[in-house]
Image 1 (cartoon, rainbow, N blue to C red):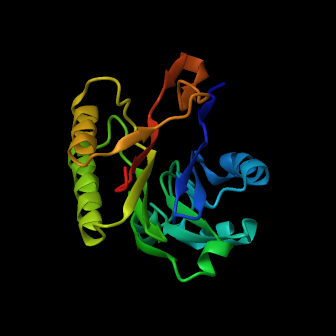
Image 2: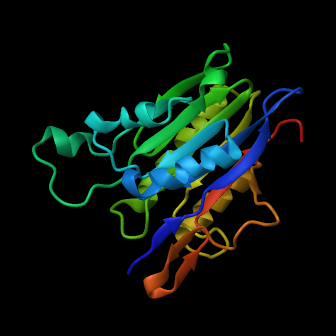
Length: 229
């Protein structure tokens, strides 16, 4: 049996000099498959912000997040808009981005969603700019172009908020410790923009598993740039 899974990744980040928030990043690999793990994660860690990918929902089912996670406000989109609008959905669903902000954050005048698209979601909390990112996997048509586009869009949004700290978290679909055109592109972007990878000492050495083919890779990352550092 194939067991494809992605490990949730939680990292605390400062929001103001007095407070910090806990940010969790998780690839659901389908809402029904990932929802139980997500609920257990919320019960145990109480994250303030949850960055989700691959929920696979159609636009009509996006309200499931608001129904099942009443303590959070959901911002995101479906990757199936064009397919659904052109007729009945045929084949395996895919994609979908969603960022959940804890309601306590929304009750303050510091939090909002700035932009959503099927490859990234931009939110802000205080003076922290957050990007939930889903880069294309191997075999995706125009993969290099899409990756470059997303990275350039991140640069463009950061230029609009140059004095804010920044966090990028998500599925990069590339092992940044291996050499290929995509990982090289991402690493140049990180170096040029002075981003640092976040990885706790007790984290697993992989974030994606396919046990049937003995495949283990570290392809999900949390990246940060703090102006005060």
